[in-house]
Length: 197
Ligand code: ADP
Image 1 (cartoon, helix red, strand yellow):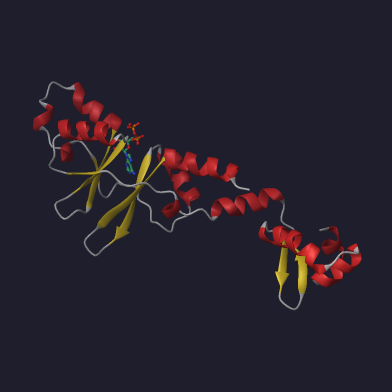
Image 2: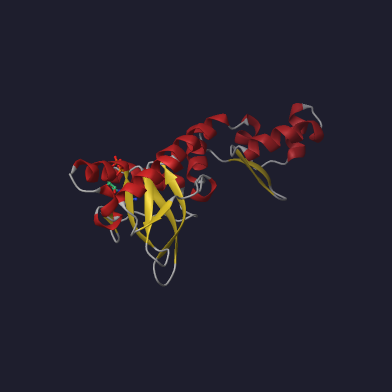
């Protein structure tokens, strides 16, 4: 790296010469430094130092993580199901957030654990209340897309103080729900960064 800093752009051959090594011996080392982002290789020009610190490279890596690589399968209920059935679904599917869809399978709302707890505090018969009465509804739902950077979704979860966001596909009629990003997905992504070679 010091040689490239001092003499770059410099060819692999010239670096090898300065170190009294063959180009072949050096090749894997140069490949690692290039892949890690410390050096850049330009065909017919040679290697040069990118000037990026470990921190900057780590941030670059984080920004490249996309929603679609970390999303889970969404759990959805129809807006006409009862609060009772939504609670049962939440337990059976072992999730903390349910997405609510209309008869055309388009996103209509979100149900969190506390939304369901709040509804359970009253004296009403839970089998008689449809979830569309108590859910947070469109257009107030924060959504994300499969190509969004995961870090943007993480920032929104913090900013809006919510646990999950539906991953959607936009159609002429509304949003189709194709995935789910929760704080757990973000935590897993965070751990996977540390486990990378
Ligand atoms: P909990 O209420 O169990 O702590 P959340 O923090 O996720 O769970 O939810 C807080 C409130 O925000 C709830 O009323 C819920 O309906 C709503 N909410 C959850 N997710 C979203 C979202 N993606 N967009 C808008 N509102 C949401």
